[in-house]
Length: 178
Image (cartoon, rainbow, N blue to C red; front, top):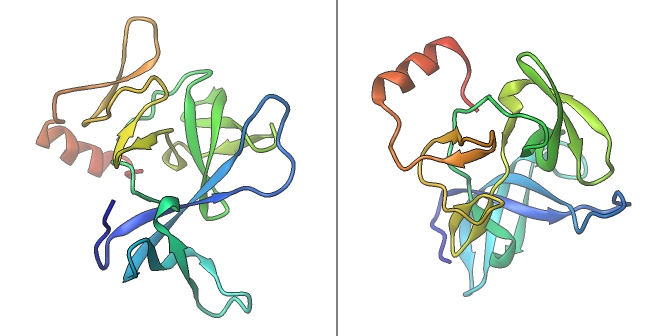
């Protein structure tokens, strides 16, 4: 996949430390900006929420394109239920987990990395997506196009219809976007 200068992307970093039993590798997703291509498979990026060791400037580093993915689409959805797969924004990174419980309008997310439940405001929780060929997919492998709705069994699913403009305008006025 080719990325362009000034494109906002996510950098996938494997989490160090212990993982809860039954989980596979856990990852953090950090938002960054592409600064330059380095050869055919590396890019120079500047993180938006990671800092240099001396904490005086944003961290800039060279990364392999295999750890870069496009930013997931902004999906204005807050109706998650137990045990929906989500990402929670904690300490400057998106971390994968599942909804453990809901305390309106916020959530407790059980992190894949250590099994700890973390309280998260609703605007810091998003649908967990995996990318295949540069396209976002949910855990069922369905392509994500625009919005997210609930199907008959209560699971989050995709919508083929683009969101209405007036609905977007009202959402901007009533609550912050994720």
